[in-house]
Image (cartoon, rainbow, N blue to C red):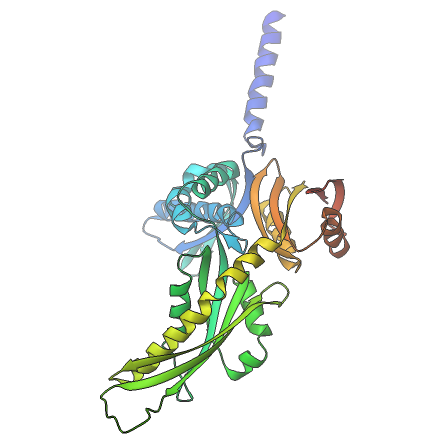
Length: 370
């Protein structure tokens, strides 16, 4: 009888162990399941290597999805090197397990879709360590300009380069914006919207023109003199508000006319840009900081949609994903809102089908993702 019981128990244990491989249970708090696809060149000569290549590419895509949620807000750290070298390049080390959902030939390519358990906590820790060590947190500011020489559009971008030079030691990450037209200067809303979609918190719009400066008297000289005038505006990409304005006029001298014009534009724009630094820093520091915790997020895709919600609220100047664990997201939010109740109300009012409030204090908000 005892022997029969042992056999039954052993069979039950074996069955339990066999079924475990089908259970989708990950390490608590460490990871989330992510769907990711890949396309690689079809290789009928070596199918096995081709399939391995497809799986590796899908694993890399899964890890990139997770890394992306930590670097997607408008005030960011320049994570590109860290993400590429420490995370994406070692993608297999951040995947606990994976399942091949689909794989088939697609024309001249091989399609692979996997469901991977990505170690979110490990990726978050690496990015957090990089924040605290060598990388400096910066606010994204886009620079766009219209540059005219003798009434003709110049594409040399001397004004933009001068702005970069003036602000190189300021805590900003400057993004290259468009060369503007008359319509953009008169109605900058489309340009501001694009800057916001590209991750900029503010945009600097520069309108500069240069023309020859007449020399009084009969003195002859081989040098050409140009005079440049510039008007600059710094605007919030959230609410289109003007943060600061500045203007400057400067001359440029050179035997070559084009160089003289470029010198005058660069000098004028650098002088005007320096006047924007303090007002921009005041605007960066003006928003109140709130701690937002959202539970029951459950998937990376839902986490991205949550970030989209925060991005859409114009009162929110900036947000950073501090931690994501046990399907709960922890954000640091900078908003031009007086109280945490008001911030929670705006989120609920606009997206009431998604959230319920579980707790609110002076600086802390806790919501439950439905």
